[in-house]
Image (cartoon, rainbow, N blue to C red; front, side, top):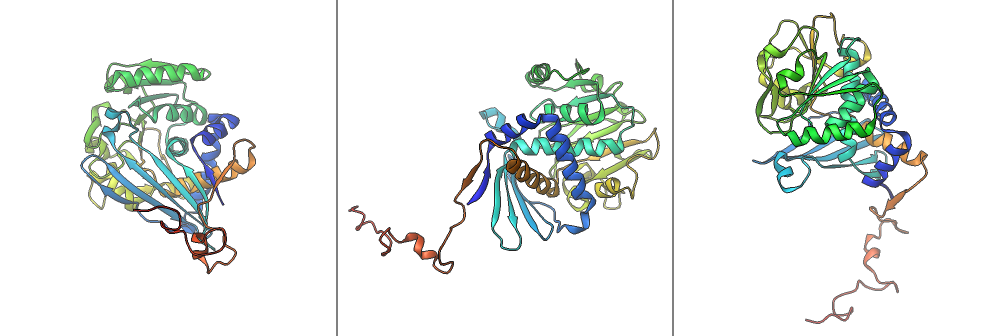
Length: 359
């Protein structure tokens, strides 16, 4: 039997711990794994692209545990009432190859993305950053707000989305959360939202080379949390922002980010720093107050590895709805897989004729 965590169980676990504590603990798990970067077998995710989206597999292994995530990205899904992103994942024991956990990762991916972004921003944004512009008010926006409010002390979020209904939704949800001291400002444009912001989070969904932020919007000292550009041909920043002499770019896994991140717009010699070095203290996230820092986040399998391990531990700690599924056979004789097809009397498998079914 294999532990199973579905949507309802994740909702239960988040409710028991509280969303902000859950995100903060998840960030600690992710940071600990990034610091032991060299222990992991890493590779860019395997992607199958179509005209309307992408389906990806994201593996990671530390020699003791193996994890993978299946995830899609289909920006037009919302037109027919479906999510843009769905995901599930498996955590397995390397020694036996047996799966230990099968889990939903749609909700968890939003939580871990927010946790990773806030984790990076703690090292990259100015310490006095309190105002965040949030460009793109869809499925990720509440999670980003929760993480930056709790982990960085953001006290004002400035909202803009080309879809006014998405901003309506975000405003309603933030009002229900009653986050202490948080001011929510609805803006009429990206430029208006960005004006006066310390941190700018872009989390748009369109699969195209969009220009959400342009050079004239960027003030010295800003931190750009660029989340939405996460596959080939999908970007949010004008390339001239990346060409600024005062810009510093941090990525999760350089070989993957060169293909999928904002830096896909730049040549192969363009300098970037991997997040592991920033978290380990071997490279600065910010060297001066006037620097413009960019976290070019595309999501990396290590974050899902950390999330699955964290989910399994919390699932086992917290009482409540705990389920297992018979994903792997349990045999008296491990060489006799055929026994699973034998009938209860130990005879041959039931055929259509023996079962009373005729043509």
